[in-house]
Structures are given as structure tokens and as C-alpha cells.
Length: 125
Image 1 (cartoon, rainbow, N blue to C red):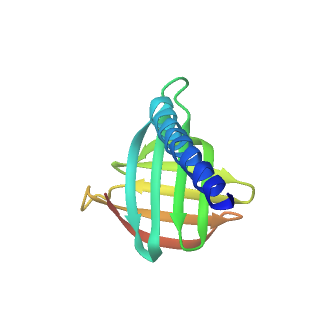
Image 2 (cartoon, helix red, strand yellow):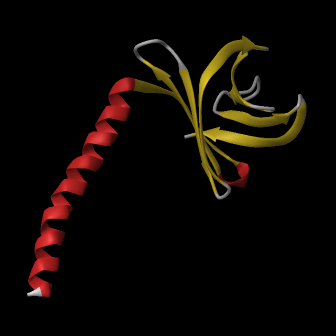
């Protein structure tokens, strides 16, 4: 009887989890479009998104150190390339979209109190 109950619960939970996962993916894709996707040294994967409704820039990073999501970013063309900037407390994250030498590369820079902590080379993915 317990085995039958467990199997029934599993068969009910599986379609619900699949439907929920599909819905979450679709809702994320329908509210923002990807602007930049990079893979950086040190295992950092950075995605910059822009909300369709209000143009807000979003920063999504995954790495072995964890994940980070930030909003309210800015974008500016500097020295012939675009830089996206995001702030979280005393930290700032700059993502350079390309370099003067290679538009397919870029850089991730992390600042703490306006002092650089980390600089990683990136490649557009």
C-alpha cells in the first residue's frame, strides 16, 4: 500500500514540476531579452538582460563561488566599446562588451569601494 501511494505521488508530482519549470522559463524569456552573454576566466558566466517593459538592465552571473543577480544597471559606450555597470552596496560590476582589438572578447571587472578587486578576460558565447 505504501509503495502504491509513493508511486501515485511521484506520478502526480512529475507533470506538475515539468509544467512549472516550463512556465518559469517562458516567463523569464517573455519579460526580458538577452543583450550580452559571456564566459569569463575563473568560471564566470555573465548574462546581461534588458526588460522589455521599462528597459531596465539585469545582471546574472553564475560561477563556482555562487550566483549573483542584480538590476538597475547602466550602459555606456566608452572608448569604442559598450560597458555595462551594476552596483551592489560597496561593490561594482563592470562588463565590457568587446575590446578595441577584438569585438568577440570582453572583460569582467569587480570593484570594492572604487578599487579593483578582480579583472577577468571574457569571450562572447
